Image (cartoon, rainbow, N blue to C red; front, side):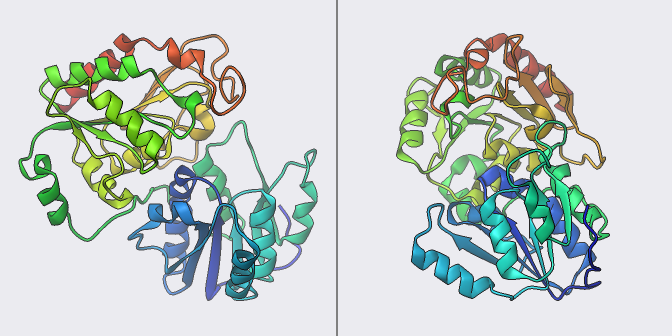
Length: 368
């Protein structure tokens, strides 16, 4: 780490920069909670992409959310400059990319950041920040990577994720009768953002029917993109008639409320699986090419400064049961077998349904 100059003991305004996907924003909430507990009277703002801001809805630890489009135009950049320029006593970049780095330069004379490793492009960024930690893309979970930044400013670590939240669920219960009727239900999130993280449609259907036969109502979740809505609707048509499809119909905060009441959640490597993990309910996470050391869901109540999961093998930690795909190459950490985001992953295509059923049985038996 760099210690060229001392940092202000109690910054009056802090900006945290999280310019990635939904799951990345959620995995930053332990950092935000730690900062809030250390600085209860400090103004704490967060800069995120506009399509990820919903993950911070109702978050009690932050004062303001600043957003920018994923593909900003000149007017968007100019607006951001006016909002950030020397407005903060401390700027924290949680990613090593160029845009977060430039935003720290704009926002504050005092900067703490994750920087690229010394033998990679961008290693020079460490010379423009007061404190830094190297990005570890192999051996450190994303939550712990973020929390390393706290060590640089002597802030104690808090390990709890904070899901989005709304004031009450009365309106939600009126919209979805299974909530008001107190039916026992399971939530299946079948569609990740990228094809290479998908399990098979046939697998989801067989698991859904299995859960229904165990007496659980089926709830299918999904995002607002038309492709995702169509994908989930196709699965719904092949499941029991009383299956409830909420894809594209609820906000992230509302979804968090629905998931929190479920007996079990099953999902792939996606931000919503991280969200389900943060609610504390039993989660089955289906992982293929992705390295669980870095990107497994963070277990509820896990408060240790160690990685909760190993790189290989199906594992269980607190409320998370991680089922890893088949194959000696797993996890390859590539974007599918064809090495692009829309390719299939054989390790997930070959993941047998019976492994998921066995895990369901174990979870439900433990909950009795």
